[in-house]
Image (cartoon, rainbow, N blue to C red; front, side, top):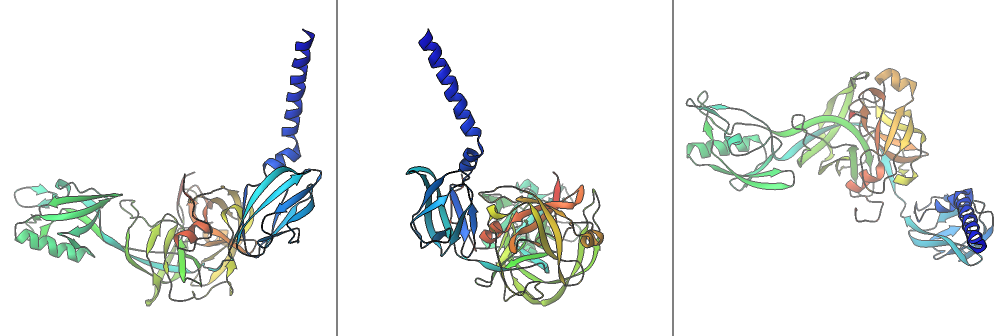
Length: 443
């Protein structure tokens, strides 16, 4: 009996000591020590272990990173003080913290090549040509005998993309009109290749003759282009790649993402601004400027914006030299700035606050919540307005992301995405490839 009680008390004491250790600050700090650390060349990082003892840090590759300013393979360190990690060149290393030869923690350090890009802020005009024609609605054709929609009868849905008619690729609506009329006159159906999401369908449509104008119709409303105004986010001088908008361009009627066939970006000039209010997002009004001077092409339309190549460095940049970029995990809550245009073509800098940061290991659009704090911008726009999407966000001298959406009920606040994900979609990846295991409106 005494022996059982002794075992019980020993177990309780061990449990208490374990809980005490687990709840202690040093243990929590040790548990929060990162397993992997990504750094850019030329940057500096501090690691906190906060164990009140002296220990040893083993550096597997001193040529890649220096610890506390030394290139030694083993360094005696005070584990109660921050460790300084300084990358020397791109590559990988492993740092292992030991106490009396007992391994406490290891961290893999991945040093990425230095990357510097020009932040944008310029207003741009966007002219997008779809890859085929987008179906935005059905309508009835009056044949004199009946009113029918051949397209709806053939099984074509709103949001479908017609990319081929009789094995011929469709470039614009004039091609469609010509082919449908020819087939109607010959009394033959047309074979359509239709893209619906990730699915490809082969459908047969019988054109119907409109009694009023004697033209053959599909009974569909279609669209082959889109145009609008947004903001340039960045330009990479090495690859000439650019990114803009920070969000996907969707068709106004269907809400479907537009599949790019061709496109251009041109200069734009802001003429006026409708101030944002609760429940009514504001908007920049702008006109295309010098349309004959094409700034670049559009090759991709993704959840993070539009991307392509520019012919040269953008004009009217706020910064004369390119800036470094921040990795997703380096973005912090606190003061930041955005670059945007509120009048004409002048890029200006305005103060914001990054009020929340979502830790993301894989691309997602809502990486941070931002709030406009600049009195001048609030007076001019009421906060974030449509047309401001793509405005680059800068923190601690680095480009960290772009404005994407505004909260409908609070125009002073909105979402931002990390610049890392936009760079990846532009083909300027800063991360090694890995396998992927409140109401708002686009700004």
